[in-house]
Image 1 (cartoon, rainbow over the protein chains, first blue to last red):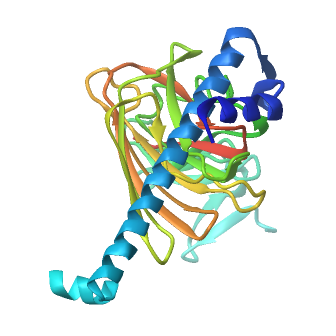
Image 2: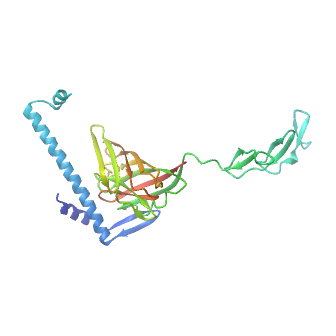
Image 3: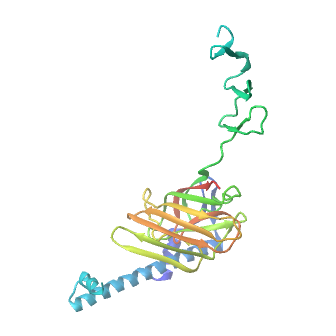
Length: 81
Length: 231
């Protein structure tokens, strides 16, 4: 998912934002601060998504390499030990 | 007693009239001399103090020890805890423990985060560094915020199920010292059978007065307590 798509999802899921607690009460987050919070959330979620994609690609590359060599992961670890 | 005396060793005696009220004590004040010591305030304990005349004893509040609960708060569906934990750090303590009871978020894979606050409502949004390890029983992963970060990140998965969030113990050291960093250590058991442990610091020296909790993405829920540790 692209950054702008994630942001749009967050905007739809959170038409309003608030902060606080039962003890101190709740305050609305509005205007520029609302936009900045959603933007920050979107960037953090996007970064996580990229990291997950990268990890998945690495895992696939590792599997492909092991297949090409005709050995298991345990055997590869044995070679490196 | 019929005689109005409390016999001692079958010969000497102390008059019952020496005591006036429940809890009064009879104490020695010197050789062959006694006096009444009135009961102290509820909760106080008896302390030896040779400077106190004539008994050499006084009632005093027990010395503070262990940890003291400063505040507990519950929050639901918030972007951050806002002013909830402002002014919980004071000169009474140098070190604090924050205990989160099932802190969870709207987005399971988002990061639980803490930011320090100072001068009441001002949030420190820079110069944090941190490092943590996570173990879910089958694999390890690591998180590192080596370059200055905007918050202290405490893990990678806050969880999103009520009753299965993350239960953290976060220790904060020297939070009010302007001469040192604020160090933090933390440990948690989180949703997904994940064990997290790590540490970090804030290297802008200030007299920090509170903190807020948030998630890297999405709203949060939970109940959190903060304790001061006796100096």
